[in-house]
Image (cartoon, rainbow, N blue to C red):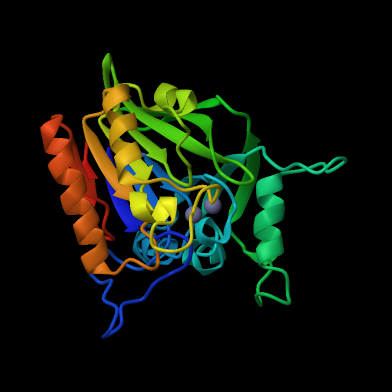
Amino acid sequence: MKITLWGVRGSIPTPSTADFVTSRYGGNTTCISIRIPGQVVILDAGSGLRSLGLQLVREMPIKATFFFSHVHWDHVQGFPFFIPAFVAGNSMALYGPNLNRQPGFIGSVLERALRNQQESLNFPVQLADMPAKMTFTDLEDGATLELPGTETKLVVTAGSLNHPGGSFGYRIEERRGTEVKAFVYATDTEHLAKSNPKLQKLARGADILYYDAQYTEDEYNGRDGMPHKGWGHSTWTHGLAEAQEAGVSHLLLGHHDPLHDDWAVARIENDARREGLKVGMKVTAAYEGMELQL
Ligand SMILES: [Zn+2]
Ligand SMILES: [Zn+2]
């Protein structure tokens, strides 16, 4: 599978300025594509989705499958700017967590969140007026889906994580006979006092774990001012511990804090890489435009 990172910033897009440079790691919010021949999977629709859309326009008609970790802004805000959604003949299957379902509500929570985002007060084109064909499905914790490609297939498993309002992580396996490659997407998750059994299950033996490393330990604990406990995000130190316990090969740190410029992220990457070396773990900070082949 080919994994491309289109946005790795958390919370809000963070454009680079003269005083606050973010061009190395990128300022767009979360969006990742995973491709095998015959399948395009898109993880989250942060502002990075816009650039992916511009690439996919050259391959139309497209058939894409979205998996949403949750529907907080930084994970859906790119959707109204996804050009292929404006073109008839393209089709999209969209999956999100079955979370926060209000009593009596029938229908897809994901569809409702995307529809609300494009209400006429907020955006000129309503979701229902986007010409591409879309189907919406809310997934249960632990759900597994098979997406056959032309040569191999993807098997996607959802697992709930620890975040205000909830979030899902996804394990994406490419299977070729008995050969399995696994990429695990675990963003918007706060660590627990001990390792998170749900994350452990999802990440077991993965080749790559993309992990929410928004804060440094000091920021999380509030040593510099405001504590960030209960905000639903984690640190690289906990990412490293989780990755080690799960037997992951490569830890990829993402959901960079909007208060972290390139220097701050580079420092995190350095510290994490150094500690990773001690335990034989490859650690990298995710950056926009990064491509990984598994
Ligand atoms: Zn987020
Ligand atoms: Zn969130």
